[in-house]
Length: 296
Image (tube, rainbow, N blue to C red; front, side, top):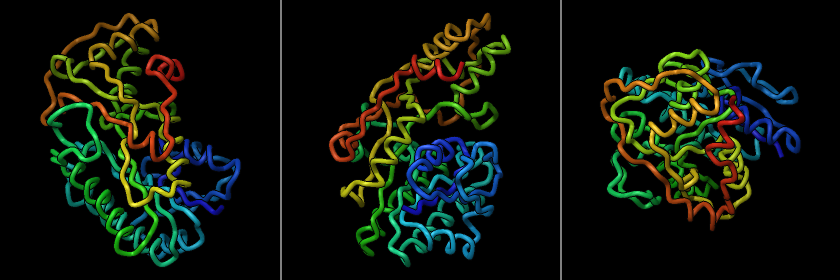
């Protein structure tokens, strides 16, 4: 098939391109604002551009049988600092993509997020749980999640929304807006203090990028469209436990220190994955310990 991956030079998108490129003709749409050219598979066609460039977007979507939409402004902090700019990329850009896809009946698999749930009433979190996002980013992801459903229901456009929990893996870089695993790893490798926000009892459901790719590939083929699915492991670890595990696997002498908690930080996060298992055939395969070994 002809496949388009938006954000295909980024962390998750590039791994998805690697998996697709062996069997399909893959095009990558990326403006390289955060993605790297070196991440892109050698056989993929690169279209340099932003998803807000409607002319370029329509042309790219028009030649595709399926679109994997990974392009996004992925930072909660950045969305708080610049909600209008974040909305423009995450919501307006996605809506333009769905409109282009509707003109060509192109299947869309969209990256949603666990951020849509906010502070959960209970864990594990199932897809029907209340949606109370606590940041503009969470609101934006909830919006595109719902747009995907509406476009399926109103226009019969085959869509699937995948609600990623805490994704980690190779090519994820440490930085102000990166995931906690990449940040802890960089600190441990440099024997710097591993900084845990708050008391460290917060729980997270970490899913390896290879399992996220698996979910996307299954979403490409499923008949169960117009639905949203949690993509996670269903297992949790506290942030303090994670810090100790990373210190162990890296052989680091880093001290684990606790610093001020972050405003709006979620206390508990763990997904219920039965829906993805039963309807997509998704089965997470990488344990956290094994996944961390791929990064050391």
